[in-house]
Length: 472
Image (cartoon, rainbow, N blue to C red; front, side):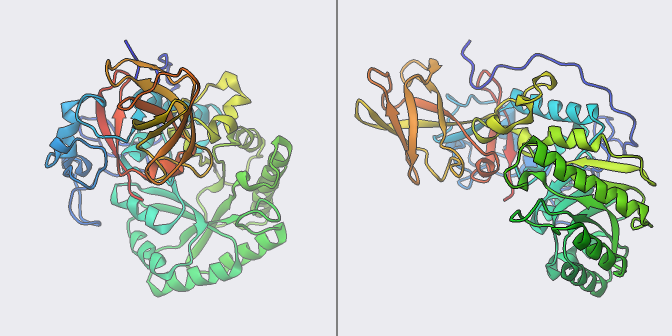
């Protein structure tokens, strides 16, 4: 049988997770994962929800807003369409259409959670990658501690879809966002942690939260910058201490740890990344010795993107015992779909192959709409459909427009993208004609997800089993 994307990985045995206080039962009797709430109803944000209400994501109507979905599905709910289990090629989908491999997504979810457990790490995958509550739920079901976000809007999406543990990897100084956070803190089940990296930022946060009547302090971690010329974060340990002093003087804030992002280390390599991570753990140890985490229930030490989580695991394993329980929090996000470019080259599993391997889950299918010469073709997918900020799409498969046979895209290269066209070069003698479908691998998951609001989740035989809704 021809395979659509990637053949299902061999089944692996799940490592058992230690008990961690599951919440109330979910529909069907399974306990909810820690850090999650039941899915909300279709009622406005903040409305009371119950576990027996239908999933609102399945109740959304299919219409012209969602590109590539079958025109004859207009008016159906997303749930109805998913239940029809249409075929991606013969079920009425229009091109271009982005597909996610169901088998590869499941494989990747299991692999990173198993990796985290093996190395004693809690896991809060970065939600900015997919901005998909459906995938957030899957990540929580696979044992994630919570979800990481980058900006307040993303935190609101998480809250609207039942996420009770959020790590925001930025300093929040927007007064309107802080007023919203103050209201959310009235929920005793809600755990929110964010960066602080400046004295002025601490002042703004304290003023806004106090004015909004926040019912309890907001948990913050001091961000250690990754070096001169890097992104955010206090550059020196002395500056980190000054920020911590400011937090201690701010009644609306509580210092609970330290954090940063090793992916911003200038000219990063294994040695320089590990050296910075040891600065981070030394900062945590020093702050603890100085009593700066008084009032915290646990000490948070957090790092970890998708390129150096092996180094994070190594260095956090060296962290000595602190005065409180330690939450070693990994925040990788791109793993859920992986890719066929940027992260294929950067993944730590290239360095530690015995730990496993991620599988690229995206494939963008477009049709050949012009074949003006034997060396050139054009497909109907461009910058509006494919990520192009890091690498061009990679031609991988051709589905013959006459027979439906799928074959490797040998001799075919994507050389450029216009808004709605992909430029394709073909070697002499390459069989490719108008009407054929070209399947392309993509680079950089974050800018692939944000071009599509509803993405078919497809099994290896082409059956669409679910739809992944995004909220960018």
